[in-house]
Length: 329
Length: 124
Image (cartoon, rainbow over all chains, first blue to last red; front, top):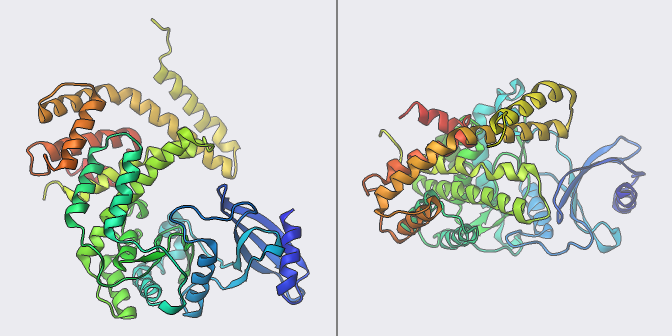
């Protein structure tokens, strides 16, 4: 099956490769898949990852940067010395594998609960926030001239998108209304500084080892915008997995994140603006949970998991209230 | 009148069966899905137990806040409109308390182990 096509593809650009083995699908919806496999070589196997839209699924939906842009960004990050897999090959039509790319597989952990609880990460945890601040600074400083074409977002556009999506569900949620109103009243307008924004910098898209961060993945939501957005998104409570007093991913402090960011990039973090994006991000995740419920009800993916994610939108409501209307203070 | 056992008793019995008898025998991705399934049944049990009281308390608060009567969905729609238009806000007496109570009642059903909820239970 896919191993035959991958074997032919790899043989064309990897000198000495004799085939591939152990291909397994890691994740995938209808339009995008991730596969792991090993390249067989006389000097030992090499771990690789295929990220692709299967044949027949060319165009990327709505907000997605597109797989070609993802490959370019990942390679630029790698070239800049950021923790990133090396892109080994961008798929061509004659590969008959669809569109996408093949990258080096980096060993490590992406599952938040393990990163936050397992003993092997105990030494990494206290340094992660600072380290990730440095990585975000590096992303924001990638050379503008080499960046691919990406959508440009502002806070105003993001609020309008969230508003439209929330209203399309047709079910009133007073806490979301409060958050939308709060965001509109504090909308800072277009950012004075516009940079590349990763757009989904959080647990699940970061490979962590006992030594710290090893790779940033999933550039699907990359865009141009306010650099403070990435710092706010990683502070959203939904990514703290119970460690609610450690705002950065459940392992660190905002101060450490900002210090790492400033030390590596020179730009000063703006805590108010980061908090604005944290509120936006919390609402965004809540609306995404509602979207899961919509797709469960209407879409072809009538899965129990999607249905249950719909019941997690209330988690973002309590987090929004803790941010906007804290009690007993 | 329907016979016994009640829906709550039945769902609880099914969830306990899956939890105690089936879970040890299932591995891999299906073990994860089974856990989601059991969580779903537990959620339904909590909703059956709590929804009646929390819905009527929510409706009473909304009638007070809005000075109108109606079905719970319509009352929530009316409140949402007023918040969107800025006619009520966090300075409006009773609004923050209402949103907090309503949200706490939702979490008690949806996710009583959520850390923010447990913190706020002790914070009241």
